[in-house]
Length: 545
Image 1 (cartoon, rainbow, N blue to C red):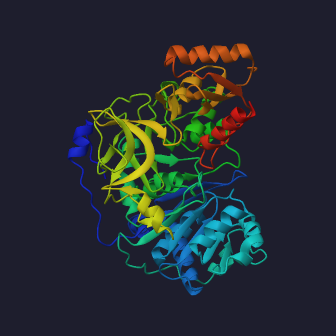
Image 2 (cartoon, helix red, strand yellow; image 1 turned 90 degrees about the vertical axis):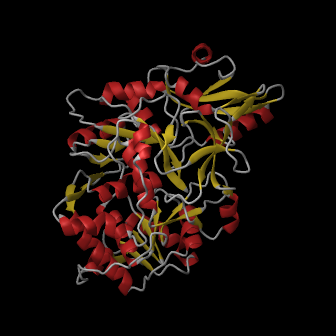
Image 3 (cartoon, one colour; image 1 turned 135 degrees about the horizontal axis):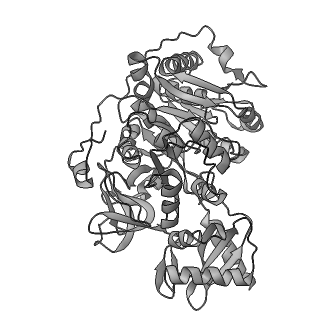
């Protein structure tokens, strides 16, 4: 845990990793608190129909113990894979905890995955059991014949064809369970990357991954936790951003988590939930922030009591930071990481003023550098690959069933993130873009994020995606795909206005030479713009031309 500090330098100087030889995530985030304060609130679960249930640490321990006992009775043992295909719910948290106390490996899966996505992940991992609901059960029924390792499917909302009613199966199961004495490096969680290029890869993490996340979570929430903190995210717990940036770190610290993921995210519902549940801390992905900003200010009658908001996944610009201060009364802290090595860079408004367009500094405990292709650090101010030194507790163990990809992820002493960045003499790191996102135009190397941030600063723009379009003279030109805000109509005059807006606020070589007005942008399930799809579209436009 980070200690109280007034400066970033003090924060770094006083930090030391404390990773014990033996450590179990399930014990840490549940049993630890349940034995001390069984009535302490762990979760507040809001269902789609508006139902509300408070779950104490004691109740969470009893539920997870009964699930662990049932899994063990059905043959799940140490090292087996247990997939969890559920939205935010008490059973989701309890199933992860149960798997970890068993020494099994939990696999978070997204409810919106289709047949192919589920079949690949369950087949590649050799999952032995799945905990899901009737919606997930219907999807699994179509592919189960192709999953020979899958022995049990449990459903939390009653029995369905080919499934076991989980709650009925828990009747008579003991409420006590002796957890497996796992080492910190023993495998605990298998998270599949979003797979924007090729098949997704399964990043296998040890139990220590939670401890590795804590400094980044604490820094991005202004030295979390503080008295009265209460956290929520619209990010699904199937992703590292929901599971290991919010749910598990909060439970580790004894902070109550609001569990609510809307069937469809809307700004109005988010504002109302945060007010009604007295949310003090939130992880809001950039897409959610942009949608909330486009909606307009919340109802003044809503008593928002935010202490911190953290965001990561796409670079934030000055427009969003200014909006956040005005609407929430806080400076949004930006953090950076990826599934294989997360929460390694962060800003922290409590101890250092933010720099718009620059994501932050290395979180204490993480050696983050900008390196070349061989893993050698480059000079300050020089662009290169963002790398993290080996041996970091938050770093993945390896890719599941993929030694070649694991080896390719490293160069020298550093894990290569595949993201381009620039580090200054004070250690601030500016994100430039993915290797294949960086635009090369007339000899300039241009990152799309800064242009996107600039565009959404115009009142006509709700969302923007920027890519390089092939050009015979300039190699590439900057092309912007723009979703307009309500009340604005596309047209050549507006396109010229947006071009001038960027040209004068950024630089002449960065303005989009072409602008296309679109209804939607292609997005990953975690809310990131899929620039690969936009690049393909731009290339097809060039070929057609």
